[in-house]
Image (cartoon, helix red, strand yellow):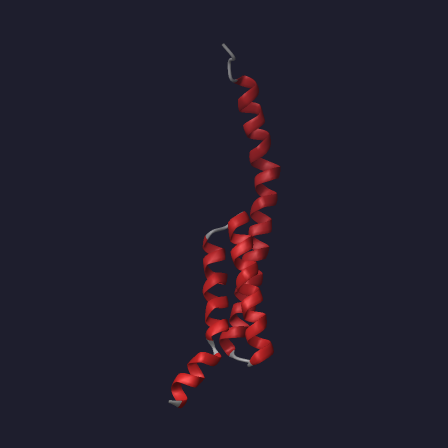
Length: 93
């Protein structure tokens, strides 16, 4: 019975870590939102019960947010001008 109570203390940390990993895999705007949600769950975990999983969730969620922002900035800086150039070269009939 005590093992079940120990597992339930780490639920928010497990959810936060899982969402943080998923946010890294889904880089971009969706990845930022998912990583931010995972970061919130991990912070809640650390405020209730400090666990290693909660700390890992905070680290992974932060990495996911940073990678998502870098990806979006690179997209805006590099890809958008290429799309505009292709649209200018596209013949309008």
